[in-house]
Image (cartoon, rainbow, N blue to C red; front, side, top):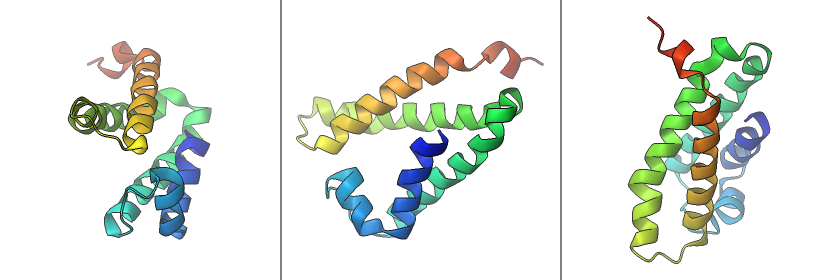
Length: 116
């Protein structure tokens, strides 16, 4: 998570035009929304660092990742694919987020997280 979120986040914040080219195949316009996404990715990367040392204390970071990726796949990625999109970024992120969401769901100890 540290590298997976950190590199794209920093690229999006510091060089948004390159991020649009490299990460989104020029399908995303450069603007504040792209940089808000970059800020989220950097925040997740920073929060993941202490999670490497004490994973149970940092479960909310994993939960946020699971939720936002799953929501994006369900509300954006899959409908775009079913509508016949030809944007490579949609296929890439839908695949990546789907696999990552399954891995997160399998690794989060929900019994500990939801314990009263």
